[in-house]
Length: 223
Image 1 (spheres, rainbow, N blue to C red):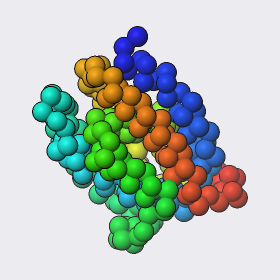
Image 2 (image 1 turned 180 degrees about the vertical axis):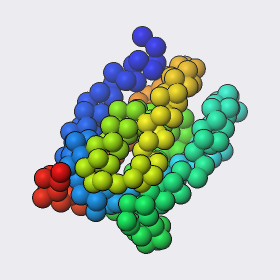
Image 3 (image 1 turned 60 degrees about the vertical axis):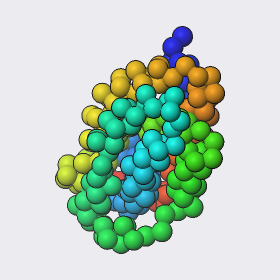
Image 4 (image 1 turned 90 degrees about the horizontal axis):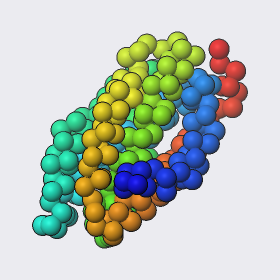
């Protein structure tokens, strides 16, 4: 079994917990309101705006013997810059106020997800951040395009209100192959344990982030 296969297997329970969140299930079937979609995008903006700083922090904290990961970090950086602005544009196209979203205070659960990753990078093991990368990219493959299409159809919104979700659904298929090749280079057992720990915890933290999004149950009847 490769390390990537082990990572998938050992995070299965946490991944299942995320996929059972009512807000996510409703989104995948298009049964959320416009307000809920905008609220989701707002929290996405707040955590995605940290992706580049996370990667930069990870690279800066790597010891000399682990700098073989710099190439992977540079690749991710080149592809992640500016994604938070895509989200703000989606908010505006969906009828929200993108500047209000930019200046809003993220939900506590979003702050905890962000703080956990900075703390792990700086205090424990920067290689562990690859677990967060795994959570985000594997989740995007599973839900991004399906959720975007369902919500777009239900709310009669233009495709341009889903640039973030559509792009990630497409990008992360190739990203996951690159990620698999990257983590299979990680042979240090402590680093492997760190990646699994962060992946498991961020699946659960992301589940809490989604669960904290205001969810209008009456929107389940949106046609």
